[in-house]
Length: 178
Image 1 (cartoon, rainbow, N blue to C red):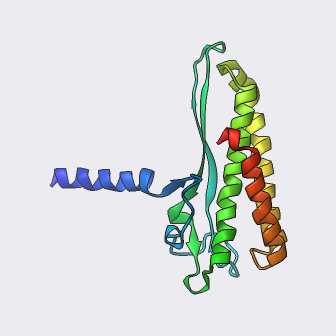
Image 2: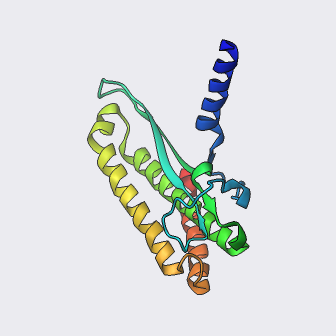
Image 3: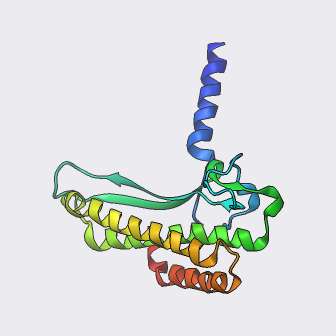
């Protein structure tokens, strides 16, 4: 019985920590199967889909301020928090949601660029990272909100086309920080 409980807990933890995130990859686009939340976590009852994306970083540093620091930045899509209204899914809405994930990657690249240019040591991390991260994160949130507002969540086709091109261009401009 004890072995079964330990195995069950191990499987549950592995699902929680490994199976529910998709890390951004140029060759891996979102599909409707990736949206697995059972209810709309976005809050707006008119929403037909919600891509739960986020910036994450992992730091390896020393207490010695002169030692090098390593910061790994990723953009992720959280499967079990991303939702779709099954009777309203279209290719256009999926592209809109993919852009949300791509925007997350743009800001991950901006953060990687900031880290490469400014953070070399643990001391640099202590002095600059928190403020730099917060600035980039605030820009990220503002861009996501502007994107939804201006495209009217993909309803405004002209603005959606503009943002499809802009997001692709920004990804390309920051390709060196992929």
